[in-house]
Length: 247
Ligand code: MLT
Image 1 (cartoon, rainbow, N blue to C red):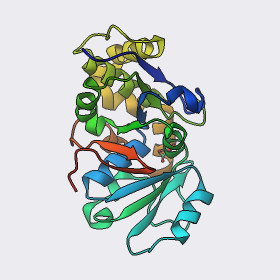
Image 2: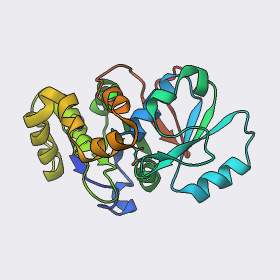
Image 3: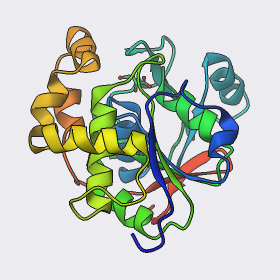
Image 4: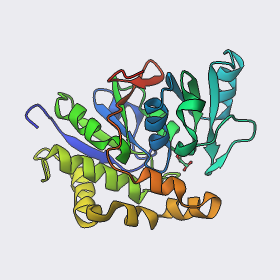
């Protein structure tokens, strides 16, 4: 924490203006499921991920690239978009399918949050799957840090806030860091109350219920795993690649 300035949590992608993030380090959190899919795809050898804000932007990029090397991926309201190669199930982002490919990625909240934050120079993507790698990267940051929870259509998503609280708890080596703003204090309190049983509380969230009705519980179980990879996804010039270069 020696170099850290302030630490805050924003609770949905509609809760801030773009220029509030400009000089900050930003961590995008969409546990169910966009950030878990991004971490998994890069861990399984995807070359890069291009986050887009909507279907129009996705189609425009897809029309101008060689389809051999690109996959069009994403969902609307949790359901795979018709005509896309993949939806947003991290379990489908296997080595065989995504290895060596660039993914054009379009999701309901997660990729919109990334696009809205993209004026910042320093943007990472966090899931429970890579929480320690994220914390290590943040501990050496000299800029103010914002943990940006994608949420759901402007509302808070419990699982995103829980991960934000987990990150804060680890940055503070088990306590609330001194320079925490109100948003960080609330997320940290939530983690202190519920963090001992991540999987069971995530299964009871609103978006978990939505996903269960659509596709069952496999993706939720997968996204609740903690620290299965040290993958550190970072956005640079519109593309998310590995900061700690494994590919
Ligand atoms: C999103 O971007 O809102 C999500 O990742 C939705 C989902 O596919 O579960």
